[in-house]
Image 1 (cartoon, rainbow, N blue to C red):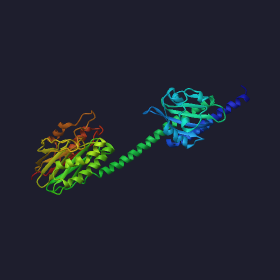
Image 2 (cartoon, rainbow, N blue to C red):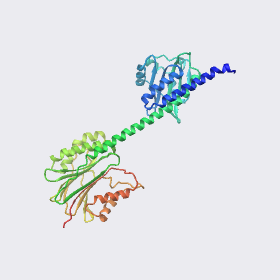
Image 3 (tube, rainbow, N blue to C red):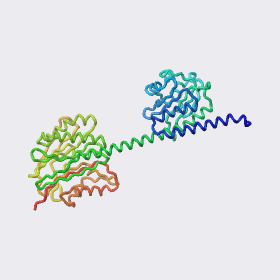
Image 4 (cartoon, rainbow, N blue to C red):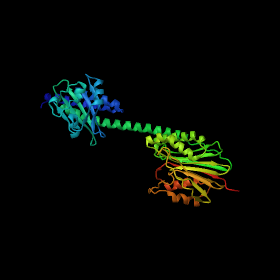
Length: 432
């Protein structure tokens, strides 16, 4: 081949490289998939001089190819809307399905005569496919979808040079799609983290400012969610009969959904509390009021609820599937009567039991969630009930809660927090 004969070939190769370089620069500046897809298809039409182009992405969940974007000079946006909403192809179905399944490009000179051709898109859009190129979009052995260009403008059909050009362009497009997906995932993660930080700040507003109980009685509380937000809650509420309503609850689950249920439960207990003098009746009414919301969403909450009279030390307690309070006397725990009662939100019309006792000077009552006993160390061992009761034999109190929290933290070590943890303690000063 002499120099004169080589010139058209060299010019064609140079033109191809120029187009690919321009396409690469253009795609590199786009981060949003919404911006990327239309530009990608404009470039595909441009580098192959085609009448129309389309991008179909593979959905691993449905195992179908779905139109992501369409560029048609005749139909315009109408074709894009029609095909995205109504046409999906199985793997192996139509030219696009065959290419995706076999991961091989095809060049069709007469689409209407090819047995693999599916006319679904043509029937929906009114476009008539004559000749086409379809190439797979593959990234690191993963099929992303297929890229189609339809009807060569200046030629009767596409040729091998067009195919080679579109294959090279598809490699650029696959990288651009993966990059854009990663950018969008990062942005979504950043948005979610910002929302969780805001939710955590809001949740802290639900923790009450601990009151001075008076009469030589005191209260201490701590709550730590396993995630940014959690489903544990506690409150100390003044009652009309000079008692304090003290409770700890644990909404099943973690994160934002549990926190939203927690907020609703907190509001409901506060609204119901002044209307019920007995803790078992209060629990029953809160359960009925929350049942529909919690059961429909598959949530439930364990709760232990007490009324405490600082002047006498009288305590009235009921529970709904929650760990019993710890009644601490002389470096030991006195066992409370076993109280029945299923968690809130499980069954409408549930009745609850209550018990009463007197907290003497120097004694304490601790309300905990199972984040204490189920705290895991680096060997995935639980803190457990035995270590909990053993602590009161060697700890210094009252108050006991801060030391208990330190003991659980030492047990956990560098292990991640696996559950929300809450401790509330009421104690009376020792006799002088």
